[in-house]
Amino acid sequence: MISAAIVGGTGYTGIELIRLLSAHPEVSIDLLTSRSEAGTRADEIFPSLRGISDIVFSDLGDETLATLQQCDVVFFATPHGVAMKQAEALTEAGVKVIDLAADFRLQSLADFEHWYQQAHACPELLRTAVYGLPEINREKLANALVVGNPGCYPTTAILGLKPIIDAQNQQAERLVESRIVIDAKSGVSGAGRQAKLALNYAETTDNFKAYSVEGHRHLPEIEQGVAQLLESQFSHRIRFLPHLVPMIRGMLSSIHLELTEAGAAIDWQQVFGTSYAAEPFIDVMPRGVYPDTRSVRASNRLRIGIYQDNERAELTVIVVQDNLVKGAAGQAVQNMNVMFGFDETLGLNFAPIVP
Ligand SMILES: NC(=O)c1ccc[n+]([C@@H]2O[C@H](COP(=O)([O-])OP(=O)(O)OC[C@H]3O[C@@H](n4cnc5c(N)ncnc54)[C@H](OP(=O)(O)O)[C@@H]3O)[C@@H](O)[C@H]2O)c1
Image (tube, rainbow, N blue to C red; front, side, top):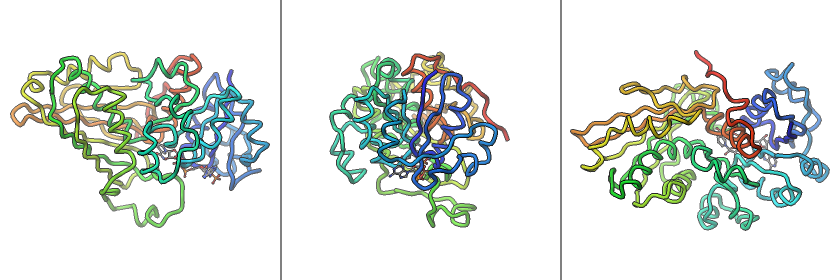
């Protein structure tokens, strides 16, 4: 049994971590923090936790830091810039850190400063941090002290592109042209549990819009994923455009690629099927079947559908996930399982909720 703490337990990914870790047979949640709700029982704020957890929120003060240092793992379900201020003190005490924010995702300090508008507090620790996509970084995660849990959109984009980039590298020739278009949609919980006018019910319901049209923070993460994580031998120009859709959970990314002559000779349905056959949380849909977001709701699964049109030289990869689970808290628990040598699916192997 390991001892876990969650910093930022009043947010959407925080409560999702409580839900998942409470059911995990090898984890005890020993500390849960909130600055606004310190002293309050979590199940008073979230009645869904009644009978599941009797934990009380603690403030994130100096005393709490001492308690955090006694845990085996600390999850930061906080905004960007919080984990990097605590991570050194924790890792020096031998505590593993999993940050759901972006402090340990981008290896380029210039990119981090540009996109997150702050200097990095611990660049040396950043260099040792592992990007938390188990499907790619399983071996590195097993020895990681600090994990940068991926952004929700990059999880769909990088896993949606992996079989293509891998095949291209293996054949050492371009199978898709350089331009990649990622047209992505997210439910409103992707923006967290904050009170903002743009996230009000009347603003988001019965409405559908593109946002961050001129540049989204997840673009450099996707670019890093293709160039460094997938080690693409070929350069790619990526256009990533996110949209907000009127639903609570769920994310769908349509990835559009143009096939080269060599790429059109490949059966991509078969390539994706083979590539992910052994992955417990990735499901490649049968030929001609495309996934919807409710087929993954509240689960750690990510489903992929493939459409190939050789006459038009088109390949479309459709990826769905629950942004709060495989896109955040579930992936963090999957990473924790790998880091502590547990079965990777422990505490995560349950069916999605339908309807
Ligand atoms: N929502 C998603 O789908 C999703 C997906 C992937 C990644 N993420 C990332 O995961 C992180 C958490 O997201 P979320 O959606 O759960 O956010 P959220 O709902 O806004 O919750 C943020 C939490 O952090 C705490 N907090 C805020 N500022 C803090 C500070 N300076 N120090 C300590 N605690 C602080 C808040 O509680 P108090 O104010 O009470 O302290 C709250 O519990 C973010 O970095 C987000 O980008 C989110």
